[in-house]
Length: 531
Image (tube, rainbow, N blue to C red; front, top):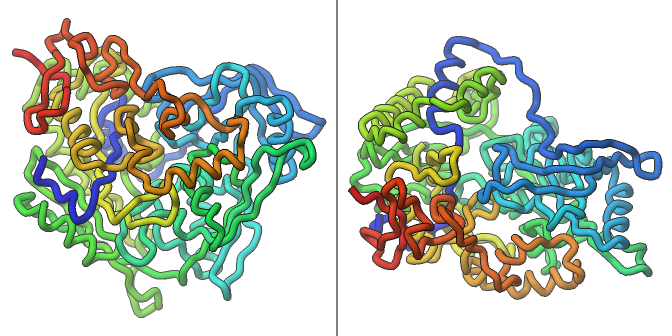
């Protein structure tokens, strides 16, 4: 793994523990091949409360709440609580909510419609804080076709943004692949697609103006609305804010004329991936790479812009297989104990896992990767340098590794040490940057020191929220403001990425996993199986 092309493009790294396992993808595809359509309801609200009422007779408020994310588990598997949850429907109601929290000196966090982030950005400290949901702040406020701009509320879903822009013959050129994200959520975590062209693939780099509501003193009614535009250095703090500066209310995006894309998948040997990875991103505007190391194969997505006129045939849809709707009964079956993957892990069935991997890649090819006309591995995307203070520091390759994780926090996964060593190589040997919305605690250790403008961000944070109401112990740790650090030292902590092991108890000694040096990176400390 030391030969990976981190330079001249530097690494960005995210890891996602899928508790349900990657066999979900296989079952999903098989099911969709049997049934042409799936009727499913929207995901539940990630905020659950025991009581509901209206504040001042209008603003919807709930009490005694828990908050989670879309997979129902944070990296430390804790339950986040809040005394109250507010659901403003206008900017005025949003201002009132922030003023209420400021006057009462309550901790505040912002929740999106589906709470897609895996990290604890949505968790206020303790049980007495409050959560502000942006699910009803989802309107288009202005469309300027001549200037190629659109202003929307921060709770608008990416799907709606794409559709509304298309009505005006405009497009957001680069975006993440799941359109269940909100505009505010994408900005808060630095979400991105894949491109090294133009301004790059990060959505926040297409923001030319935003409005943000932050705490204020009594002379300003305990809440202040700031309008930040291009040229204002405070915009570079607010457009990747981790939610610690306040609540983003409105966002104006610079769009482009509607266009089409031509997509071709090419499967090759991974023998020259080190050379190809850097070159490929420069040659194809939306290029991306999926690497299957166990199969020694790489799938290159050759993806480029083409003329959107009628002379270019085809009306394709990229309905990514992993994000399609699935009936509740199928999801329930996939998440129950005794799945194929859990059996493979328990029996240390290496050959079986390789068979599953080949089945996954074969099925993806058979299903055209979700692409239709008219109608897992290690995932590598390209991200450019950003002016955002907490954005990417240089042109980068983002490595996204999806792996198995047991429902039991003390159960190691097969080849536990390999993924831990890859993580530590990326983050500490090559100074990779974390994804604010995805990584485990380990990846954030010392991360803030890798951002050359971190001090500028922290100065603006102090101006916007001097009481730290929008901060939490977790965000303070990430930003280097809490000297306790991010490591949670306890039994099995290394298995969850809550610590780097220093003692055997941090692994799973009763199951034969002990803390040992890395095989390639000697400074790594990993949970290795002793036979």
